[in-house]
Image (cartoon, rainbow, N blue to C red; front, top):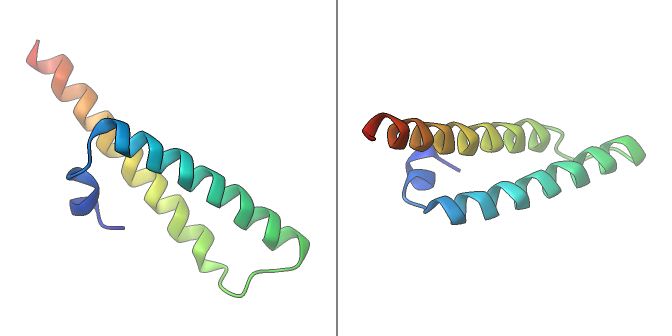
Length: 68
């Protein structure tokens, strides 16, 4: 998912997406440990999506704090 698409979402939607991606990452890691994944690059992509969401949430938090 691109950062541009994520920036259009609200904070609550981003937090929901973050929870969903963390669950997906846990499942991917489990599948990889048990039997291997067809596309191990999915783990890397999911981790990057999580990082993007956390970055956007932090940017918004800092902009709110700076605006006060």
